[in-house]
Length: 113
Length: 110
Image 1 (cartoon, rainbow over the protein chains, first blue to last red):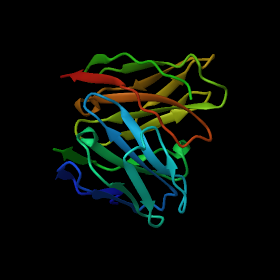
Image 2 (tube, rainbow over the protein chains, first blue to last red; image 1 turned 60 degrees about the vertical axis):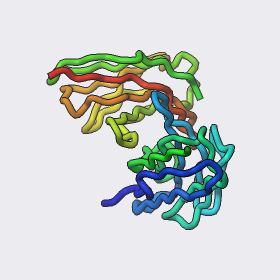
Image 3 (spheres, rainbow over the protein chains, first blue to last red; image 1 turned 90 degrees about the vertical axis):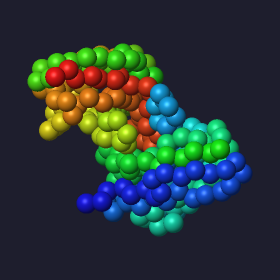
Image 4 (cartoon, rainbow over the protein chains, first blue to last red; image 1 turned 60 degrees about the horizontal axis):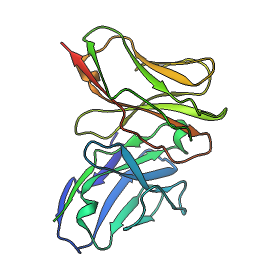
């Protein structure tokens, strides 16, 4: 089982460039999430999608957009990258909310210079 | 969602039980307690969750105090692979937002 797959695993961007982080899950989960983790910190929720067709802001949504492309895929877009967005980004999915446990991907390490 | 408090770090000897504490004194009656762990350079991994009574699964046990203001994650026999940051999270039943704090860094000594 692949679980949650994130691409790319590493990326370096210049300030002002845009990019999309991809996330796909093969567990038929309804809910998907994007988190960021800065050094020495816990994870902070950026956006989530409770079900296909819905998206909602989390704790730190500024500078990001998301698209729930279908039930399997949930992408995160940085329109104009800033050094403050240097972080490790994790995608997660769950059957429906936290009650069923989240499955996380292995992360995308993004550096903005 | 209730704020949780955990020690920054703990140590355990290999093959001994480990008790990881968590305080959540402002928890409400419908808030669940979740535990995740994060191994180095990996995404977090679900460990266990519960509401009122103690819970067991293949990875760990969760002991919840009668007043629900604290809980303890129990690893019955620590292995080197259990060295990780352990996060205790409290969230409402209908909430989709798991808020991760800094967690407890568990070191396992061979």
